[in-house]
Length: 317
Ligand code: GTP
Ligand code: MG
Image 1 (cartoon, rainbow, N blue to C red):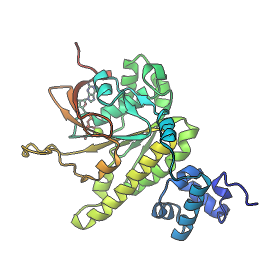
Image 2 (cartoon, rainbow, N blue to C red; image 1 turned 135 degrees about the vertical axis):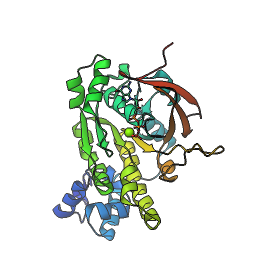
Image 3 (cartoon, rainbow, N blue to C red; image 1 turned 90 degrees about the horizontal axis):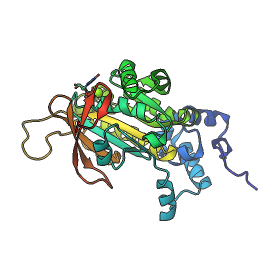
Image 4 (cartoon, helix red, strand yellow; image 1 turned 120 degrees about the vertical axis):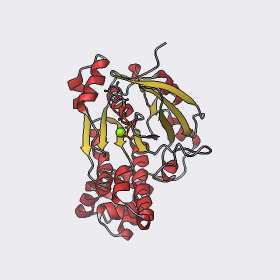
């Protein structure tokens, strides 16, 4: 009788060499492989497409992947955790906070508060569940070089937390270009279990792609790569039950009076991958307005919050 397939190395045809390549590319268990696409695996692990196709199919078969009942989906969705943002207004807008098994995108102009919300979430995810966290750590992909531990420290101390401990549970990687960003995302899977990660922040998800693919001729290639990257992030969110928080800078276009004044620079591709999309805009001083643009279960609504020295807060009564 054939050996039961319980690990990637049990798949027929996967020797030590291919097994190693797959693991190095971030496919650490059957689920991560089963949820991946042929081209993605072939490219990430430098193996032939035929081989990639075969191992993915084997992983799917071993896990009995295909249809599941709505009861299964319901059970899985019961595991969804929520990270509070510090503002009850914003939490309510988001249906209770930033949720796991989903990609939440905040887009807005420069200074709208996308990074600040990220810092706050990196702190809050570490709180106990009853205090609005998930008792877990955070991975921060710093694409724009704007991660500031001193600001995170200030936010942590503002909540009366041990800043040293908080900073020790945020794993930061500076991304230098879009390829680097993609590789880091693929490798995250290994760290998630090891470090009890429940939140992944990519700030911003689009800037490296914009910088690396300039000019009309490269647009299709850029979208294709960005597409694959977002797919990786969505898969990680689902497979590992983590929250993915991504930011995207858009230009405010005051010249547009009707329709969407913030045509996303990355095109609309993000829309197909982010589960929840929220548009942030500056108001007076530290006041910010958040609006749900697109979500399968959240109503389109607007709310107000503040960026204070202690972090994200509700407006004073
Ligand atoms: P880009 O990355 O440039 O697209 O902008 P962003 O949306 O990430 O903006 P960010 O989160 O960096 O927000 C910057 C704004 O937050 C500033 O304009 C301030 O209004 C506010 N802010 C930043 N740091 C502090 C701080 O330490 N204290 C207070 N009170 N406000 C801050
Ligand atoms: Mg920023």
